[in-house]
Length: 104
Image (tube, rainbow, N blue to C red; front, side):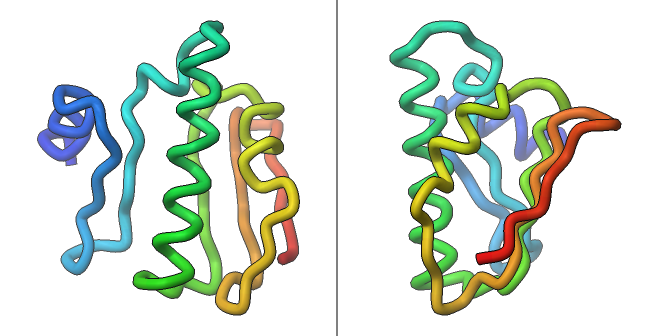
């Protein structure tokens, strides 16, 4: 898993372990920044994943685990207006105490 995360961060692009595992990742530089341009790229990566899920992965439940590294408003921007014929529920956790579930 660490090797996968290191590769995603080194290549500076999203990656997935499919079909071996239902795990995808975006580079940490997009989630740990105050730079507006990087925040927009974080939103884009999340939206791209949702599109890929809709067409390829087809998971009905999605978990985003950022644990303090992504500001909640960035995630809210990414899922705003999202509709799906596949996804029923999106769970997002950004700290031990703060999380939310979105019914799609």
